[in-house]
Image (cartoon, rainbow, N blue to C red; front, side):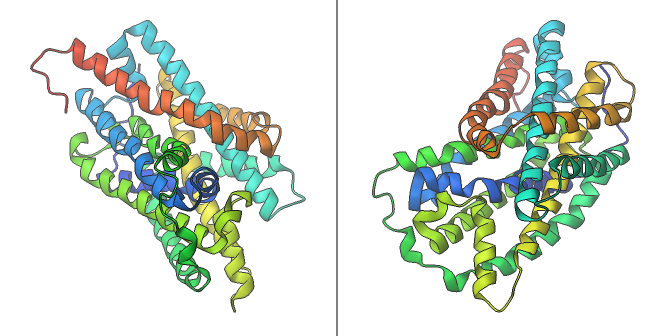
Length: 369
């Protein structure tokens, strides 16, 4: 298998920002309502047990990268498990990326069509976003990282005023009673966000581009992980204290909060800010997914340059985005029940098994990392 381009390097700081944007871009709009449906007023606590998958994945993926420097997860899967099993894992991960990018683009088109472009065919939203992301992927991983360095501060600057404006409509009494039904509802509410927190798994494609030792980035990634936890907890608290028990019945609950404070306040049409946050974040997420998909395809089929696969992979992703879900109800069922199980197997269990096998096969003197 080919190795990733050594000249495309990003810093640990840039990589930690990329993973932060990757996770929160869809998490903040899609997941809070689901968390409240299971954990009710204690949903803001659910992110704490959910976050454990993230910190474990940071340690596992950086350890694997340290043991197999310069290789992506597709490549060291073959080194660890042998050629045939490694190839099967590579095909599975490539298909997983295809399914992941298709569902993400489908979700993007659904949000845009519900909120902004009601009469526009979803295919237009899907194709436009994927083509734009394709140009960034052609420019390389450095370009994606630099775009994110500009985009992420804009997202944060747009979110902070929304938090401040929502203060007057918050009723802290809606957070009580705390743990009245015990810890079980909190654990149930943590299942779905744990799938998002385990997305640190995708470090497996980006760590080879790091311009420093993989284990040294753990500090940056831990800060990124903590930022995700804090942001999700804040959004959950705001959503619960504004809407209370009706939160699970609201689609895109945090978006509804922004709409609500815009209707009651002196500032109107605040939902345009939420749409801007969504588009900027989803642009980075889809670009990262398209890059990983292109890189995986090139490594599986021995292409010398992953850029040769960007066009066919982009076209395939457009087809997948149209095909994947027939209705919004299918999508909601998938992220609520199917994706958490799939994420546990692929994003948490698989890398842990790879590390375990690698440790058992290695010499006793070789450090786990």
